[in-house]
Amino acid sequence: MTDRPIVYVDADGHLLEPPTALIDYAPDGWKDKVWQVRAEDDGVEWLTMDDMRMEAAVMALAAAGGFDEATRVKAHSGQLGYCDLPAYCWEPAARLDALDAEGIAHSVLYPTMLLTFQSLRTLEFAEMQCRAYNDWLSDFCAKGRGRLHGVAILPHLDPVRAAAEIRRVADLPHIVGVQVRPNPAIDYRHLNHEVYDPIWAAAAATGLPIGMHPLCSADLPGAVRGLRLHQLGTSGIPVQDQDEFGSDNILFTQAIGNPVDMMTAVTFMTAGGVLSRHPELRVVFLEANGGWIVPWLERLDHHVEMYGWDVPGLTESPSEIFRRQCWISFDCDESTLAFTARSPIVGAECIVWASDFPHPDAKYPGTTAMLAEAIAELPIEDQRAIAGGNAARLYGLDLGD
Image (tube, rainbow, N blue to C red):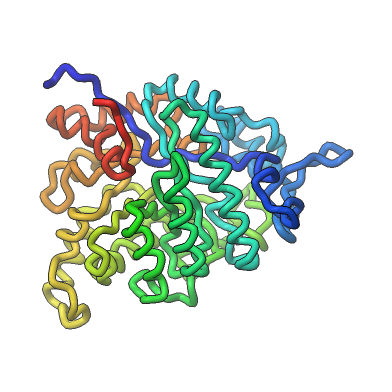
């Protein structure tokens, strides 16, 4: 039927971590250590987490999607208070209002600052912080009238602890996936190394997909650290707190680091044999644009054909593996979206879209209007799949149709 409305599902939106709500989810002995933002008597807000202390205002840029340019600069310069950011950053009712304004039916929610912290903290703290955030996230989404869905964070520098948390959150309401950074996080061992197998096995067994989500930070091995993108000295407004989050700029670390790390992850998950070893595992590659995926998979297929002796256990082409078990995320206005949907290398069924809202590079307002224009020339069933059906299949969502 062509008269059914298109349902929009955001495959990667973001929450900002709430200023103090996680304290109630931390066990005794950790309540003063868990993530929290408080203002002192002089009005200055401080983020504290374990033994870390930094001014919280520097994180306001993370909510700048939809801000005008002057407000964006104020946010990046630390002139906006973290606790004064829009309520949709961490309040479910306000987030639903934001979705309604864009015509988005469902949103799958990833964290912001808790995309990174683990290389700087003890494993015991990382495990506690993940559990506290994931429990809060489940309760947050429970107030979303069936439209808000959470992706859990993992203490992935300890794959055994991470696997245990995957099994635990699989029983939490409204948790629909788990997030992993695409970096070779443990001693530069790439993702096909057996050290990560507990994570892949637990995700496959529970049916929770892996959300490969990058970050423009040098806290873990990867493109930013390896290419020294984090210490360029070019920015008129340098990113503050370099010791903790490792970069003095956003443009170069994000523009180069995100896709390079993601291309590397696609390579090791497909050609490296991870997905062949775990045929029930599902993976979505996020926040690195999507137009590169067709030529990248063509290149991988060619290299496997020419140099198969380097992957003697591989019996399928990387593109076949990708089409069976993977999804790629596009921004709503990418010119290569329709091309990728038509390509036999990828196809419409492997594409999702993401708003990144409320992060500063979100195309907001107007997200769904831009997406509708980008997919308008495709057959209506492909439009439905890209707009929402594929994300629903990936995350196990019920669209009610």
